Length: 306
Image 1: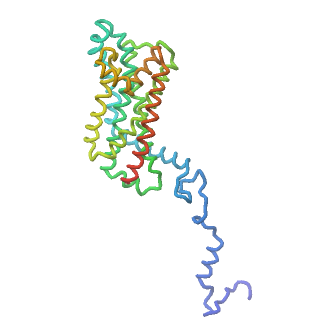
Image 2 (image 1 turned 135 degrees about the vertical axis):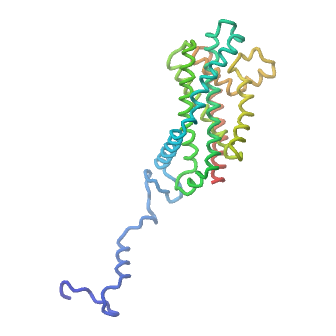
């Protein structure tokens, strides 16, 4: 065969068969699917269908950014985190301060109630996760997530990450108002940061409860109504606003096992000083127990709905 001439097909002499050329080309090309290992940093699924840790973290970051952009487009959604701390501090200090601490002793009550309000603030902010999840289902956002190759848990964790950020903003405003009204740190700055961190841990555990409510209830209004049924007894049957020693015996027993009382007492001890170990361990124990029970239930419910 001379150079520059095409090989003749043995069948009709019209050139090489396209199928044979394509077959030889594919034979030399390594398979990108069968037996391939995506590696820990890949965004694709492994052979067993699981998503790598780094890819999962990347998905959480992308979804958290999406949730933050929603807040940017709807600034009114931050009103509860910005104005609720201001209203609560002014209301409880000047309405209950004189009755509980005595007239003219509002400064002393500030150091009592502000650490307690840190516990209450986390619980109220956590309620927004449930209504947000419920609203996303109503708008069809979850239908889009269903078609994407992402872990179902990353959608829920991204919600919690953004709500923790809102909780930090609300806590900062709450403490700022407290300092303006006379709040003093009798321990150290580390104690203050410890109280904030403990509030964030407990608040994050509560979010799993409200996520489950958001996935179970049919409307956002139903989520809010059920949340208030849970919130009111826990908040007012605790040591947040007043010492339990003035309460009836049956209510004191409830207060002793109320996780909000444990968190409020922990925050006071970290800011004002006093016995610390028991209340801290109680708060951490409640946080772990709530997360261990509610997180799997919420993820399972989410997978069932999507």
